[in-house]
Each structure stands twice: as C-alpha cells, then as structure tokens.
Image (cartoon, protein in one colour):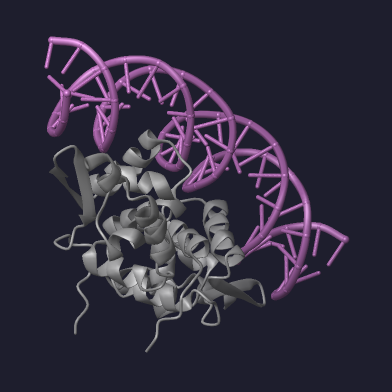
Length: 115
Length: 115
DNA sequence: TTGATATATAACTATTTGCTTATATAGTAA
DNA sequence: TTACTATATAAGCAAATAGTTATATATCAA
C-alpha cells in the first residue's frame, strides 16, 4: 500500500509531542484503553494540571479526542486524525503499557468515586 | 513479525530529536543519500555551526554515523542503530526529499570544491 | 611553511517547555 | 442553595532548546 504522507512540518510537530516520556506513555496507554484524567493520576507522579496540560497539547494537535460522561472526561486516540497512521506505527515500537493499565485498574478511581 | 521494541524513554528521545523540522528533513535526506555538512548548507537557511550541532545530536543518539573522506565528513543513517526500524517507519510517513536533493546536486559543493 | 576550505566547539541569548501552585469551571448530590 | 468531585486555566519559574557569532581544529594544496 502506498503510504499516506504527512506534511513534514506537521509530522515534526507530532514527533515533538510524542517526544516526551509522559505524553508517549499516555499515547501508549490510550492505544490499549480510553482513560479519564483521574486515571492517569494513578500512573504519573505529577500534578493534575500537568497531566491536563499534556492532554491538551495532544488534543490541540488532533491526536486525541475527549468525551465527557458525567463528571469525567474520557480521552482516546483519534482514529480519524491525519496522523493516526504515523502514531500507530510509532506505538508499535514501544513496549506495551499493560503494567500501567494494571496500576489504573488496581485503584479504579472512576468506579470508586462513582459508586 | 514481532516488532522489536525500544525502551520507552529511548524512543521518546528519538522522537524528540526527529521532532524538529530541520533534523527531520536531514533524516529524510539521509534516507535517500549520504551527505556532507556543506551539502546541507545548500538546503537550510541556517549557519554552518547550527547544522553541525543538529548533526551532532543525531550522532550522539546513534541515529546517524559519520565518515571522513579527505576534507569532507559524510553523514548517513546508521542502519545498525537499535532505533533504525523506528526511524525507517517514521520516515515512511513524510514526503520524499527529492526537491532538497536537487538543490544539493544543482550546486554540488563537494565536486566544486574538490576539482 | 602559509593560506584556503570543511567542520566542530565555545559562549551567549531569546524562546520554548514542563512543571508548580492558585484559581476557575462544570457536573453531581444532599 | 451548599458541598464535593473532576477537570481546565492562569501565572510564574527553572531548565532545555535552537539559533547566533567568534574561534579552534583538521585536511589539502601551493
């Protein structure tokens, strides 16, 4: 298949955004499972605003999308993005994030707060 | 084929380095053709030290290698790098750099100086 | 040797980045 | 309404980044 090309400057921007350990991990997690902000708080030793800011950058670039459900806002990879193919290919090269998912599900903040 | 995984932190570093327009273009050119610094000078509107510094970062990360031939130092993608698969996959997504190669070959600084 | 070319390094600077704390917004529940 | 939870935004700051100019190093050629 002929590879769908991305304008160089836009590709560089996607790479810059994924060129941060926290955001690359977020992307790796979102490849496996949608998450809300409070779930990411279980994974990263970092303040909530900091995580929100990382998610905002990914969202502003169209790489992730958000969906509010009640008091939670769930983030997921944007499969409609022009960059999705690039992102997918990159994520193939990093270890799977099952350990991080386990950290989330052990505490399961969304359920705890909601019930 | 099972994808060879790269440690997340190292992958993030590779992405950060390619997340710069100049360095991503350099990588795209080197995918097609090895080049010396004076050839890159034809392509980028930027000082020689600036280009040398970009090449050094790519070299320090093991992404490119250099080979001196007389007064020139030729750079090429390091196919032996652990990251080569990742880099290759990324470069599949950017436009080919034939226009830049043409700019180099129009002036052909290596030949001009050497003959 | 001397002078020219090719490249690297050093020192500096302006901009960007990633975090912090404090505060605002939005939804839920009593 | 009030209180609480989830998330976003604002403001500030230290560190990193990408460029600059000036200078050093290395090769080539006379």
